[in-house]
Image 1 (cartoon, rainbow, N blue to C red):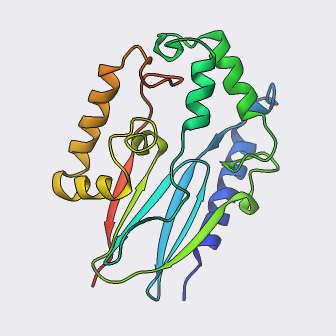
Image 2: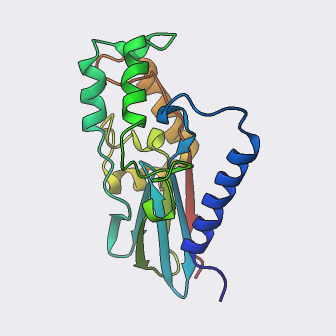
Length: 209
């Protein structure tokens, strides 16, 4: 067979590292300045869904037995508490509040972060993996934390409800609903957060029969 998903992830980590080394023009000021990102990926192999991820991207699977998070259930409680602790509505500022910048830089400098990046700890060994037996007709939803906010940050859906809404209304409609929730709380008081809205990316896949 072809490369495993772990092989593919290893190639991505190596490509990111090589490009960073080739294109950087100076040493980073501190660890917070190093590029890093969350990711989620899946690969179908002999009726098994291989999944790999780092940081807070989410993967949701729906089969005949129901809907299950392949990744850990999204949980933004700590981040929301951190944002609230910096002040009421701090995420609504048009320019990043200095306290927010300092808080996020500290968070990005913590040892043991599990991310796609170029720091020593941001390597292939930092990714999480899972494997699920799937069948034709099963659905898989990959999403950034900005889209998963419908579940953990805003409480509009649980996992099964989110997938039911996606199947009935489509991803675009859910994205519109997400942004409407954020506009209605533009002051970032009902839902404490570091910025009014985040990247919201989702990919809906169906296993072929």
